[in-house]
Amino acid sequence: MLYFIGLGLADEKDITVKGLEIVKRAERVYLEAYTAILLVQKDQLEAFYGRPVIVADREMVESQSEDILKDAKDVDVAFLVVGDPFGATTHTDLLLRARSISIPTRTIPNASILTGIGATGLSLYNFGQTISMVFFTDEWKPTSFYPRLKENISTGLHTLVLLDIKVKEPDLELLAQRGKVEYLPPRYMSVAECAQQLVDVEEDLKEGVCGVDALAVGVARVGAEDMRIVAGTLGELRNQDLGRPLHSLVLIGRRGHDLERDFLEELAVDKEKFKKIWDENYGKQV
Amino acid sequence: MLYFIGLGLADEKDITVKGLEIVKRAERVYLEAYTAILLVQKDQLEAFYGRPVIVADREMVESQSEDILKDAKDVDVAFLVVGDPFGATTHTDLLLRARSISIPTRTIPNASILTGIGATGLSLYNFGQTISMVFFTDEWKPTSFYPRLKENISTGLHTLVLLDIKVKEPDLELLAQRGKVEYLPPRYMSVAECAQQLVDVEEDLKEGVCGVDALAVGVARVGAEDMRIVAGTLGELRNQDLGRPLHSLVLIGRRGHDLERDFLEELAVDKEKFKKIWDENYGKQV
Image (cartoon, rainbow over all chains, first blue to last red; front, side, top):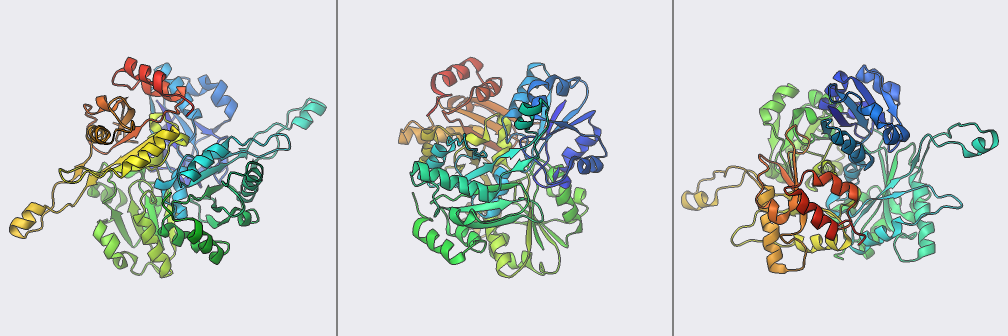
């Protein structure tokens, strides 16, 4: 059996009791380590599980899946995924490959940022489609998220923005200079960087979607003891430092409830400004 | 400290290791038992936790929250919620009340049907707003969900439909006849009942949102060993029996991916028909 086991959001104790039982008895344990990260290191997981953990990078999952699936008809293999196993489509692909060679599969769900974001007090019922924000470079500033953001905004819905992480990125300069493959240190986009990129794109496209006065919520380390939630305009969030990763951002939709405002007002950079903008432009039936 | 602890979706072992540690040491343990249910009974939870569990019905949470919050400044109180604690807004309300009297709170996230639904192979990124479906009666057939469903459909997005549960409903007939309060047995809406109601509403409103040929997925007992997923038209799903609760339904959006089709085709009532309708009407850029 191939088990897809969600690890939740923060640390080694966010695995479910059921998931932990499977990890302890599985023949091999893989950790998917490229779409999200826990806030603890692999050795901490291994110590807690009492088991060795094989880190599966994107290449292994996408091109060498036969190693992961090997013998899984007869023995139990655990494939650990930070958050919930089906937050990312990559794992659907692995599941389909298992199914095609008659390996039975089972999923152990867990918390995902898609619902953990409820900790902001924003109603999960009022979220539209989720978007991803990648690190812009001088040459590459993809704005494919913008039409989706606009769809959500025009229906009055909140948008969860998932922020880029870069792990195991080859150092292209070093590769070109010396033909040597070394990896850059991991990078995790911050709320401030995301807010800045949104504002930059708005300045180019000008459709009233994510300008400096749009209300948003920045969150860091959802589910952890040092979770932080900061509400404000994108203009304000550009200058907020929420500390270590992972960060996410919600662009607030205009179909907000008073309960959502009351919850967030307390957590705003500037409470009066937040309430004023909300009362003027949000909390409406769109 | 007041802890909001998610229990996940299926049974007593879906609690996280962190959540279980808190339950074991908390002074009082409440179980919210009116927005969702686990597939196991309270006594099974109590045996697993080694602790008594107080069932908190809607009335207790909404009108007698002072009992729940009592002494929570000084002692640990655990408030258990099936799924993730912030799937339903009611708990935001309880958290705000705690905050207003300076009781510290913490949330332990868990799997929710909002992400567990990823087990259908449908990409969570392509879901629009979630809707709820209540049991229709002869006099009361609320169609307030229909405009939201239409918004999702017109943007090409999938819609998760959460199905009604009725627990601790007073027997009004008995109350009128004999002035006696007794409760009706619990009722849980099935996929078949939901599909029928959707088709009925479409016959009245006729905006091409949820007719007999619309593709949908019915799911039962997400996260449990006997989870079932059945894909088909609403016309077909009206006649499918997915067994014991809880059930949910997804109305498929037209902006589908081939990977989603491939995943669901295998689980279709009529594979050929499913593929034909999908290839003609779905998997398009809307």
